Image (tube, rainbow, N blue to C red; front, side, top):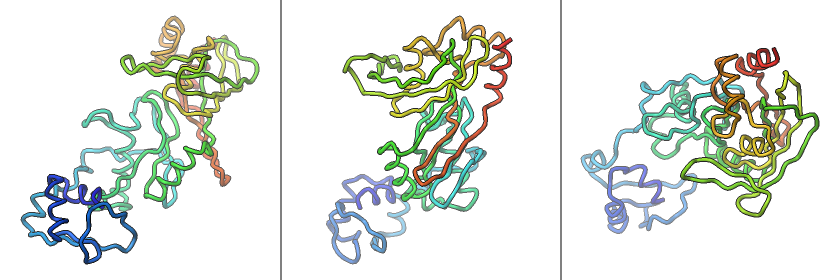
Length: 298
């Protein structure tokens, strides 16, 4: 309950809210509350506060629809979730207050389409459920409702969602492989290292080759565990970095890619999600992939 109150009276000191609870100026179902109660559907929270006090401590919803681009490519949508195709270069979630992000675009889309109101944003925010690096394109899942967020969290935690990526990598990989290892992140450099010892988080990455373009292989990568930069670092650790990857890639190959195609940024795409209920969502290769395949083969 206190988390709900902190959102409703977002400008009030926490001490004020607890004082109002003690004095029964805020009550739950007509009775004194401590703030630690778990709210249930049908519960009634009443505020015995003056209009002036409520206005003073309750800011207007912070989300400005006019300042956020609601343009997203929706691949699938139902009442609880939507799946969008994120372009390379767009953040999944903002790092700074003025960043453009897929997360904010989803909220703007739901506001513009009337699926959520500014008032509802006080107590619930739609949210992206999975991560993609800024320069990785492809499928992102967003929870539109609390039920949708909880369902997706369970699927992701239980590894019940099949996550498949396309990647153009250096060299020829001619047979499928299942890679394992341990991943450690260096926060100071925002890079990860892959080892075969028990140092770090255990990871699993599987892949199979789909096509060859000169000395470049198009892979389908099955992301079994989902750690930061896992696919990029795991493939680089076996000598087959992703084309265009500025952190883990081959500088000479990246330079060649830029000269031939103008592409900067890793050629990695989250292209297919498989849900346990039988739903499968897939998107085609991007124009950048097709251009790289054509020109790197020449």
